Length: 326
Image (cartoon, rainbow, N blue to C red; front, side, top):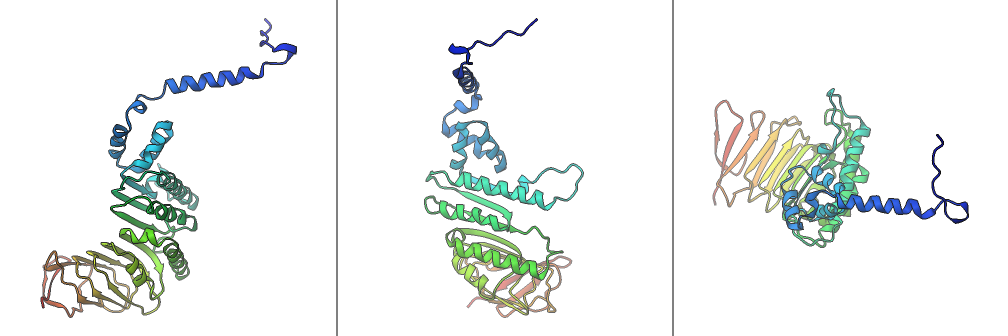
Protein backbone atom coordinates (compact mmCIF):
# COMPACT_ATOMS: atom_id res chain seq x y z
CA UNK A 1 0.00 0.00 0.00
CA UNK A 2 1.53 3.32 -0.99
CA UNK A 3 2.30 5.75 1.83
CA UNK A 4 -0.07 8.74 2.02
CA UNK A 5 1.37 11.99 0.83
CA UNK A 6 1.77 14.86 3.28
CA UNK A 7 -0.45 17.84 2.44
CA UNK A 8 1.18 20.42 0.26
CA UNK A 9 0.77 24.16 0.36
CA UNK A 10 -0.60 26.04 -2.56
CA UNK A 11 1.56 25.73 -5.66
CA UNK A 12 2.72 22.21 -4.74
CA UNK A 13 5.29 23.23 -2.10
CA UNK A 14 5.25 21.76 1.40
CA UNK A 15 3.81 24.09 4.07
CA UNK A 16 6.83 25.75 5.76
CA UNK A 17 4.80 26.69 8.83
CA UNK A 18 3.71 23.15 9.62
CA UNK A 19 6.97 22.04 11.28
CA UNK A 20 7.19 25.32 13.22
CA UNK A 21 3.65 24.86 14.51
CA UNK A 22 4.47 21.29 15.57
CA UNK A 23 7.59 22.45 17.42
CA UNK A 24 5.63 25.13 19.27
CA UNK A 25 3.00 22.57 20.19
CA UNK A 26 5.65 20.23 21.63
CA UNK A 27 7.24 23.07 23.57
CA UNK A 28 3.92 24.10 25.06
CA UNK A 29 3.22 20.50 26.00
CA UNK A 30 6.61 20.30 27.71
CA UNK A 31 5.86 23.42 29.72
CA UNK A 32 2.55 21.95 30.85
CA UNK A 33 4.31 18.79 32.01
CA UNK A 34 7.04 20.67 33.90
CA UNK A 35 7.83 18.99 37.21
CA UNK A 36 5.54 19.83 40.10
CA UNK A 37 8.38 21.21 42.22
CA UNK A 38 8.88 24.04 39.77
CA UNK A 39 5.50 25.55 40.53
CA UNK A 40 6.46 26.13 44.17
CA UNK A 41 7.31 29.69 45.25
CA UNK A 42 10.97 30.72 45.27
CA UNK A 43 11.40 30.68 49.05
CA UNK A 44 10.36 27.00 49.22
CA UNK A 45 12.60 26.04 46.33
CA UNK A 46 15.51 27.80 48.01
CA UNK A 47 14.80 25.88 51.19
CA UNK A 48 15.07 22.65 49.19
CA UNK A 49 18.32 23.78 47.58
CA UNK A 50 19.79 24.66 50.98
CA UNK A 51 19.19 21.07 52.08
CA UNK A 52 21.27 19.65 49.23
CA UNK A 53 24.70 19.07 50.77
CA UNK A 54 26.66 18.66 47.54
CA UNK A 55 26.59 21.64 45.22
CA UNK A 56 26.88 19.67 42.01
CA UNK A 57 23.43 18.26 42.82
CA UNK A 58 22.18 21.83 42.97
CA UNK A 59 23.84 22.59 39.65
CA UNK A 60 22.09 19.61 38.10
CA UNK A 61 18.72 20.84 39.30
CA UNK A 62 19.24 24.00 37.29
CA UNK A 63 19.14 21.89 34.15
CA UNK A 64 15.70 20.55 35.00
CA UNK A 65 13.78 23.72 34.35
CA UNK A 66 14.13 27.43 33.68
CA UNK A 67 12.49 28.14 37.05
CA UNK A 68 15.34 26.41 38.88
CA UNK A 69 18.09 27.94 36.81
CA UNK A 70 18.12 31.37 38.44
CA UNK A 71 17.68 29.94 41.94
CA UNK A 72 21.19 28.46 42.09
CA UNK A 73 22.49 32.02 42.18
CA UNK A 74 20.36 32.73 45.27
CA UNK A 75 21.79 29.82 47.26
CA UNK A 76 23.18 30.95 50.62
CA UNK A 77 25.67 28.07 50.96
CA UNK A 78 27.85 27.36 47.95
CA UNK A 79 30.18 24.36 48.01
CA UNK A 80 31.97 23.68 44.74
CA UNK A 81 34.49 20.88 45.14
CA UNK A 82 36.35 19.55 42.11
CA UNK A 83 36.35 16.10 43.73
CA UNK A 84 32.55 16.00 43.47
CA UNK A 85 32.76 16.54 39.72
CA UNK A 86 35.29 13.80 39.02
CA UNK A 87 34.03 10.77 37.10
CA UNK A 88 33.22 7.58 38.97
CA UNK A 89 35.69 4.80 38.30
CA UNK A 90 34.29 1.36 39.01
CA UNK A 91 37.70 -0.27 38.66
CA UNK A 92 39.42 2.16 41.08
CA UNK A 93 41.82 3.23 38.34
CA UNK A 94 43.56 6.59 38.61
CA UNK A 95 42.12 9.60 36.87
CA UNK A 96 43.82 10.83 33.73
CA UNK A 97 44.88 14.42 33.25
CA UNK A 98 41.95 14.84 30.85
CA UNK A 99 39.58 13.68 33.60
CA UNK A 100 40.98 16.26 36.01
CA UNK A 101 40.81 19.03 33.41
CA UNK A 102 37.17 18.23 32.61
CA UNK A 103 36.24 18.14 36.30
CA UNK A 104 37.97 21.45 36.87
CA UNK A 105 36.24 23.01 33.86
CA UNK A 106 32.88 21.99 35.32
CA UNK A 107 33.75 23.82 38.54
CA UNK A 108 34.77 26.89 36.52
CA UNK A 109 31.51 26.92 34.58
CA UNK A 110 29.40 26.30 37.70
CA UNK A 111 31.15 29.11 39.58
CA UNK A 112 30.71 31.61 36.75
CA UNK A 113 27.06 30.64 36.29
CA UNK A 114 26.10 30.77 39.97
CA UNK A 115 27.98 33.94 40.90
CA UNK A 116 26.89 35.83 37.80
CA UNK A 117 23.45 36.16 39.38
CA UNK A 118 22.45 39.72 40.19
CA UNK A 119 21.23 38.80 43.66
CA UNK A 120 22.49 40.96 46.53
CA UNK A 121 21.60 38.40 49.22
CA UNK A 122 24.34 37.38 51.63
CA UNK A 123 26.27 34.17 50.91
CA UNK A 124 26.84 32.66 54.34
CA UNK A 125 29.41 30.08 53.21
CA UNK A 126 31.49 29.69 50.05
CA UNK A 127 33.83 26.72 49.77
CA UNK A 128 35.97 26.33 46.65
CA UNK A 129 38.35 23.44 45.94
CA UNK A 130 39.86 23.43 42.47
CA UNK A 131 43.04 22.75 40.54
CA UNK A 132 45.64 25.49 40.25
CA UNK A 133 45.48 25.65 36.46
CA UNK A 134 45.76 28.78 34.31
CA UNK A 135 42.07 28.72 33.39
CA UNK A 136 41.11 28.53 37.08
CA UNK A 137 41.72 32.24 37.39
CA UNK A 138 38.15 32.57 36.05
CA UNK A 139 36.96 31.08 39.35
CA UNK A 140 38.79 33.68 41.41
CA UNK A 141 37.69 36.48 39.08
CA UNK A 142 34.04 35.43 39.36
CA UNK A 143 34.31 35.54 43.16
CA UNK A 144 36.16 38.84 43.04
CA UNK A 145 33.39 40.35 40.91
CA UNK A 146 30.62 38.91 43.11
CA UNK A 147 32.20 40.45 46.20
CA UNK A 148 31.65 43.87 44.69
CA UNK A 149 27.87 43.48 44.96
CA UNK A 150 27.27 40.77 47.60
CA UNK A 151 28.36 40.07 51.14
CA UNK A 152 30.12 36.78 51.90
CA UNK A 153 30.25 35.69 55.52
CA UNK A 154 32.83 32.92 55.17
CA UNK A 155 35.02 32.10 52.17
CA UNK A 156 37.42 29.16 51.91
CA UNK A 157 39.87 28.35 49.09
CA UNK A 158 41.62 25.00 48.70
CA UNK A 159 44.15 25.03 45.87
CA UNK A 160 45.08 21.60 44.53
CA UNK A 161 47.74 20.67 41.99
CA UNK A 162 47.42 17.96 39.37
CA UNK A 163 50.84 16.67 40.43
CA UNK A 164 51.07 14.99 43.84
CA UNK A 165 53.62 16.11 46.41
CA UNK A 166 55.51 12.83 45.89
CA UNK A 167 56.11 13.52 42.20
CA UNK A 168 56.16 17.32 42.20
CA UNK A 169 59.52 18.61 40.93
CA UNK A 170 61.25 21.85 41.88
CA UNK A 171 60.21 23.21 38.48
CA UNK A 172 56.58 22.26 39.13
CA UNK A 173 56.60 23.98 42.52
CA UNK A 174 58.11 27.13 41.07
CA UNK A 175 55.48 27.18 38.30
CA UNK A 176 52.62 26.66 40.73
CA UNK A 177 53.99 29.33 43.07
CA UNK A 178 54.15 31.92 40.30
CA UNK A 179 50.67 31.00 39.12
CA UNK A 180 49.23 31.31 42.62
CA UNK A 181 50.72 34.78 42.99
CA UNK A 182 49.30 35.83 39.61
CA UNK A 183 45.86 34.85 40.91
CA UNK A 184 46.53 36.78 44.10
CA UNK A 185 47.76 39.91 42.32
CA UNK A 186 44.84 39.87 39.86
CA UNK A 187 42.08 39.42 42.45
CA UNK A 188 43.04 40.89 45.83
CA UNK A 189 39.40 41.44 46.78
CA UNK A 190 38.71 37.69 46.59
CA UNK A 191 41.68 36.91 48.82
CA UNK A 192 40.81 39.66 51.29
CA UNK A 193 37.51 37.85 51.96
CA UNK A 194 39.16 34.53 52.86
CA UNK A 195 38.76 33.01 56.28
CA UNK A 196 40.45 29.73 55.34
CA UNK A 197 43.24 29.08 52.84
CA UNK A 198 44.98 25.81 51.93
CA UNK A 199 47.85 25.65 49.44
CA UNK A 200 50.19 22.88 48.38
CA UNK A 201 53.29 22.27 46.27
CA UNK A 202 54.31 25.93 45.96
CA UNK A 203 57.68 27.65 45.89
CA UNK A 204 56.98 31.27 46.72
CA UNK A 205 59.07 34.40 46.94
CA UNK A 206 60.43 35.50 50.30
CA UNK A 207 57.85 38.26 50.65
CA UNK A 208 54.89 36.40 49.11
CA UNK A 209 53.41 34.77 52.22
CA UNK A 210 53.72 37.97 54.32
CA UNK A 211 52.01 39.87 51.48
CA UNK A 212 49.21 37.30 51.31
CA UNK A 213 48.71 37.46 55.07
CA UNK A 214 48.54 41.25 55.01
CA UNK A 215 45.81 41.11 52.36
CA UNK A 216 43.88 38.22 53.94
CA UNK A 217 42.94 40.19 57.04
CA UNK A 218 40.03 37.88 57.92
CA UNK A 219 42.08 34.67 57.73
CA UNK A 220 41.52 32.24 60.60
CA UNK A 221 42.97 29.02 59.15
CA UNK A 222 46.11 28.55 57.04
CA UNK A 223 47.46 25.25 55.72
CA UNK A 224 50.83 24.99 53.97
CA UNK A 225 51.63 21.58 52.49
CA UNK A 226 54.96 20.97 50.74
CA UNK A 227 55.69 24.68 50.39
CA UNK A 228 58.86 26.76 50.67
CA UNK A 229 60.25 30.16 49.80
CA UNK A 230 63.57 29.07 48.39
CA UNK A 231 66.68 27.41 49.83
CA UNK A 232 67.12 27.85 53.60
CA UNK A 233 64.17 30.21 53.68
CA UNK A 234 62.72 31.62 56.88
CA UNK A 235 58.96 31.87 57.22
CA UNK A 236 57.74 34.70 59.41
CA UNK A 237 54.07 34.73 60.29
CA UNK A 238 52.13 37.48 61.98
CA UNK A 239 48.40 37.87 61.76
CA UNK A 240 45.79 39.29 64.15
CA UNK A 241 43.01 36.75 63.41
CA UNK A 242 44.76 33.43 62.69
CA UNK A 243 43.60 30.74 65.12
CA UNK A 244 44.88 27.60 63.39
CA UNK A 245 48.11 27.01 61.46
CA UNK A 246 49.06 23.75 59.75
CA UNK A 247 52.54 23.19 58.30
CA UNK A 248 53.02 19.84 56.55
CA UNK A 249 56.05 18.47 54.68
CA UNK A 250 57.50 21.96 54.23
CA UNK A 251 61.15 22.85 53.69
CA UNK A 252 61.47 26.10 55.58
CA UNK A 253 64.72 26.33 57.50
CA UNK A 254 62.93 28.09 60.30
CA UNK A 255 59.41 29.23 61.11
CA UNK A 256 59.01 32.30 63.27
CA UNK A 257 55.55 32.88 64.74
CA UNK A 258 56.16 36.57 65.24
CA UNK A 259 52.75 37.70 66.39
CA UNK A 260 49.70 35.45 66.48
CA UNK A 261 47.57 36.73 69.37
CA UNK A 262 44.62 34.41 68.64
CA UNK A 263 46.52 31.20 67.81
CA UNK A 264 44.94 28.11 69.37
CA UNK A 265 46.22 25.20 67.30
CA UNK A 266 49.55 24.62 65.58
CA UNK A 267 50.09 21.44 63.57
CA UNK A 268 53.58 20.43 62.40
CA UNK A 269 53.73 17.33 60.23
CA UNK A 270 56.79 15.66 58.66
CA UNK A 271 59.32 18.46 58.92
CA UNK A 272 61.61 18.44 55.87
CA UNK A 273 64.71 20.28 57.13
CA UNK A 274 67.79 19.08 58.98
CA UNK A 275 66.56 20.67 62.19
CA UNK A 276 64.02 19.22 64.59
CA UNK A 277 61.09 21.59 64.43
CA UNK A 278 62.87 24.94 64.23
CA UNK A 279 59.76 26.84 65.30
CA UNK A 280 60.11 30.03 67.32
CA UNK A 281 57.20 31.57 69.18
CA UNK A 282 56.86 35.29 69.53
CA UNK A 283 53.69 36.85 70.92
CA UNK A 284 51.06 34.11 70.90
CA UNK A 285 48.94 34.70 74.00
CA UNK A 286 45.37 34.00 72.98
CA UNK A 287 42.47 36.08 74.14
CA UNK A 288 40.20 33.04 73.98
CA UNK A 289 42.39 30.52 75.80
CA UNK A 290 45.64 30.38 77.75
CA UNK A 291 46.82 27.21 76.05
CA UNK A 292 47.91 26.35 72.54
CA UNK A 293 47.45 22.88 71.19
CA UNK A 294 50.46 21.72 69.18
CA UNK A 295 50.15 18.54 67.12
CA UNK A 296 53.45 17.01 66.06
CA UNK A 297 54.30 13.82 64.21
CA UNK A 298 57.72 13.51 65.87
CA UNK A 299 59.28 14.83 69.08
CA UNK A 300 59.73 18.59 69.30
CA UNK A 301 63.33 19.19 70.23
CA UNK A 302 63.49 22.96 70.35
CA UNK A 303 61.24 25.10 72.52
CA UNK A 304 60.56 28.21 72.47
CA UNK A 305 61.08 31.47 74.01
CA UNK A 306 57.53 32.40 75.05
CA UNK A 307 56.40 29.18 76.74
CA UNK A 308 56.55 29.11 80.52
CA UNK A 309 55.34 25.54 80.85
CA UNK A 310 55.20 22.46 78.68
CA UNK A 311 53.10 19.36 79.23
CA UNK A 312 53.56 16.36 76.95
CA UNK A 313 51.01 13.62 77.30
CA UNK A 314 52.77 10.22 77.35
CA UNK A 315 52.49 8.04 74.27
CA UNK A 316 50.63 10.69 72.30
CA UNK A 317 51.55 13.40 69.85
CA UNK A 318 49.56 16.11 71.65
CA UNK A 319 51.59 18.88 73.21
CA UNK A 320 50.08 21.69 75.26
CA UNK A 321 52.00 24.92 75.64
CA UNK A 322 50.83 27.42 78.21
CA UNK A 323 51.75 30.86 76.96
CA UNK A 324 53.58 33.27 79.22
CA UNK A 325 51.64 36.15 80.75
CA UNK A 326 53.24 39.55 81.07
